[in-house]
Image 1 (cartoon, rainbow, N blue to C red):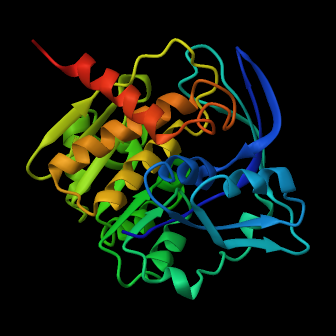
Image 2 (cartoon, helix red, strand yellow):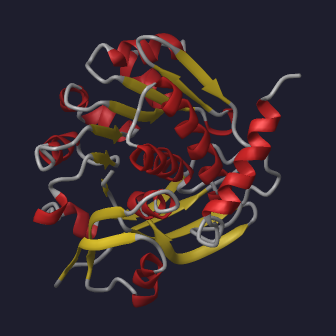
Length: 301
């Protein structure tokens, strides 16, 4: 089934206790599309400035990613973010952010994309997410992400977005902030009340939790001792999850559980190096091999 994703494409500078990477490819839709392309063709919708380097653009050409929806806007500059991780590296400290082109009008969705059946909306303004939903009248599943900034500043609009989507992905802090609930199961069920069929709550190094009206499923993270840069882990999780679901064309609880496992695996590759260095060399065979290790870890005798 056709999968389309929309979100940021940018240039990052990241510093962690394990080093620093300057002016590297980043942004939610970069990590999402690279991870999702391990499972299916991805249609990318995004916008960059005329300063976007050719070597960054070339990264997409190595994958099954349709770039008809990637707009290069003359006279504009590409989104830039600089961040720093310390201690347990669970949260990034934003050092600087230049919205540049993403503060302008949204990118245009190509007519050829409007028949997309699986849609992922990365963490942008909720009103923009609402307008994007309308661009895909044939969508069988629309999933959105969000972040603390939008919960703080646009909670009412975010609630409207939740009435339009089939699934939502957010982290544990965001789930608690949005609902006011401490218990994550209660928080997940509260979010279901707005309309989504499922809620996935990411818990960083502690894995992820799925909530539907029928079930609650928790999965741990994949154990790795090579954590260098957590940037993009959540977007890689979403990419692996949505790529798998679009590839099989189903999203009942059983498929969602397996999709979460694939998302966990793609995220585990991403965090092992800076920028895309961890996930870029990965192929589907490598993903399935690591999934087999993960499955064995979860199997009881």
